Image 1 (tube, rainbow, N blue to C red):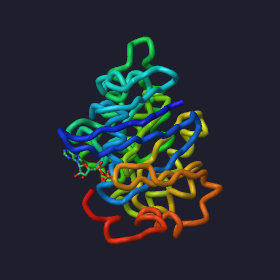
Image 2: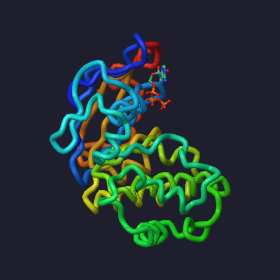
Image 3: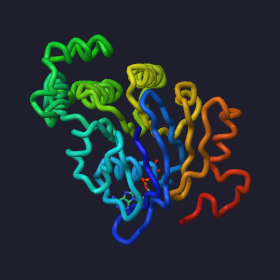
Image 4: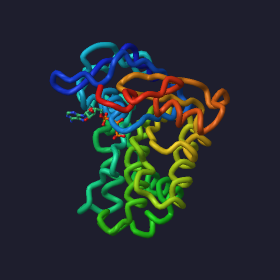
Length: 247
Ligand SMILES: Nc1ncnc2c1ncn2[C@@H]1O[C@H](COP(=O)(O)OP(=O)(O)OP(=O)(O)O)[C@@H](O)[C@H]1O
């Protein structure tokens, strides 16, 4: 299990996350929603070791990982897929996939043919473009590549920051289906999105973050609908001008 307890974090003297707690079970897809600036990216970055926490704890598989360097967090099985499909543009599709395993100990790396077969079986278009530099791919294809790059290392948990951002609507279910399949394989996925409708269909649990705090946490089955979540994102029952104003 990935467990975040009482986490606070921010940038210099600015506190963004306030007392954030959540759990992500193996095989579970947790959807994290929230308006712009709520702190969603900061939460993923803190769990992944890119931002140092000011308080609280993060543990994965029972081991405390807060304060660890990002490479060590990744090696421990917690992989971040950053916003804006961060692949290496001048590097071929194949090499980008190879890089997914680079920081694993040699004994844990899988044969290249196996990871290519696996990747191209899921996203056939990447197989067709395997020898081309990643910059030749469309935005959606680059997003697929970024997800595959994280996945080939077989992490226990994947943290995905708005993978559907900027994608053609038709590609969004493909990306979400990919993530759902990974949870079927036992991976835990924490998925940040701003749109509600499509991701909700794939989620097991939904969290809404506002102003650095988790303000809503329910199993998917207990969510009444998209409107309820939209309302929560805007400020819950007590909607007022301050809800979207400065912290
Ligand atoms: N590198 C940074 N340095 C300083 N402040 C930052 C940095 N990154 C984010 N912030 C600030 O932290 C707050 C939370 O931002 P964050 O990106 O975590 O929110 P978010 O919910 O992911 O928003 P979005 O959906 O727009 O990505 C905002 O006030 C933002 O301006």
